[in-house]
Image 1 (cartoon, rainbow over the protein chains, first blue to last red):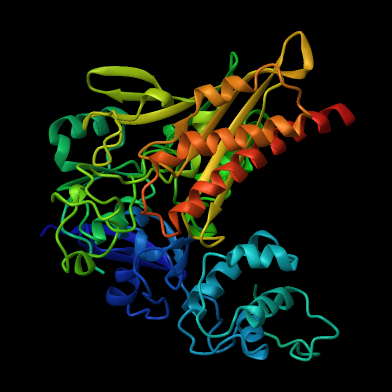
Image 2 (tube, rainbow over the protein chains, first blue to last red):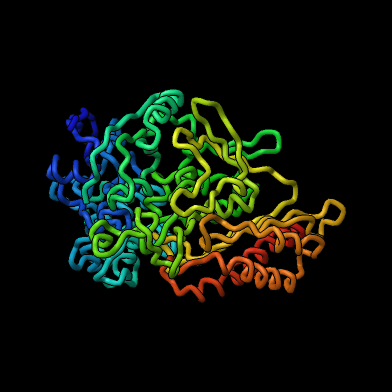
Length: 171
Length: 339
């Protein structure tokens, strides 16, 4: 089967790859680039665990052909932290107990990242709507919504919000 | 889940796309957002040998209004339709429908309005994985002779579950299709074949390039839908309506268009029920309730048991969706008066 050369910037690093036409963006980041943070859940665009940012917008990597991303910038969950320092959003997920089995977490983080880039201080309803394309089968969502809502705007009465600045805020 | 093998082309021009469609015909698939096509390919329900990507055709992504017509390019992302003040003003039903398509992260940036219009008819018995389908005889749409949605049916009863097209048909939308043979314009009312296997009256070498919607002064519109889940789901019943005021009496309905979706092989434009509203007042809720009941009676027989909810429930809800859509649309008239 033919391969086609493509160039894609993943988490700030330019990559030149020879991919097959039927490779999805998810297969390229996981299998070619060993960025296994993005997960394949349903593989048909229903669960959201493969969500990545394509030129800043959240998309299903399992339903995006790799070749369609040629020339674009992709951010995966690995691109959120600065070295070993977690982003404020990631730290908020930990602080609020928003991670249980963890399988949906990369997709949740990317959908939330896109939301916060667009609206830095969203209300709860906006957060719920932005995460409505991501399915979690463990936590029941409340903790996840808390984590996203409070990442941008720590709440005084929230026992899970850290009182001091956690640092690593490169959002 | 792996995709089947295919050759990939991404022409730089519309002519390039049309030439490839002409060359490969039934073997070609058009890739816009991919959120419908790639899922069907993964399920082996579609296996085009050649995928023609519209990636470089940004000229098909626009929303503009000229001489009493609203034009939307077929490749316009759903998010652009939702965020367009012009569409919100002239065709609110379409915005309300687009807001409900898929999940935020699918609909917003990958899914296109053209793709939503041309999404294939669906059936809960057909749109399943290859493994699921391997456990039973193939249905009509799968190349067999059985219908699992309706006993003894001699043909496919798949359902058109597009949100966008239900609203567009209510808005009297037309499609402009292009091919190497030239361009043609077709009313959405006349675009469906009533064949669940090949639902669209469209040749394999044709490409949907734009949609037009007439801008009617004073017209109001609304869309209502019911789905099993509130996100990432298809409607199990939906309704789009447009009400145009009487030129001589702004408090009266001059003409109406009521369309019921997700109940049949195509959206159902209910001409008789629509006509019954002419001459009624915009605040006549009894007339709207009656229209809902009439719509239910007219649309119920088209539905088959294939959309994930009890058939009797879906049929009963036609009344509610139509009644609510009419009330919402009429509400826009009273809001205007207050202003």
